[in-house]
Image (tube, rainbow, N blue to C red; front, side, top):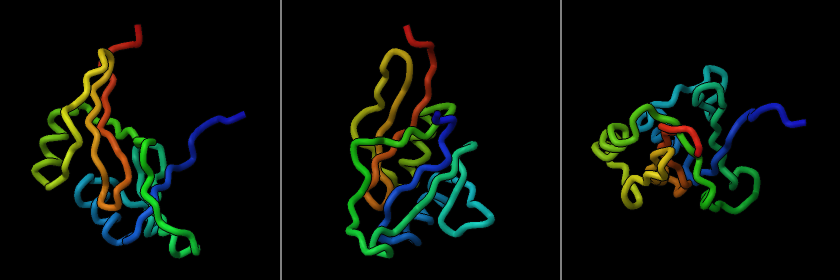
Length: 119
């Protein structure tokens, strides 16, 4: 049986550019033992370059990685001030807020906060 999520990885054409985005713009904590891994809470978040393995690059789309924040509006404003472009307005589903954006490599991400239990 599956008992957890060990890591999430996103592809990059330029790992250095992607790493700068995740560390400097999003503020993720780098893993002390890896140049290409970060921590989002208890989940390891990795960057990999498909070309290094002989594979073509394609961004991860339509599978938004939901990054938990305490305040979507405030975090969105902070990231917009850093040059991050969001896609549309913040979505309020009635139980959570979601704001969609992409990293420097074109991978889909979202800011997310559940504020109410499901009905």
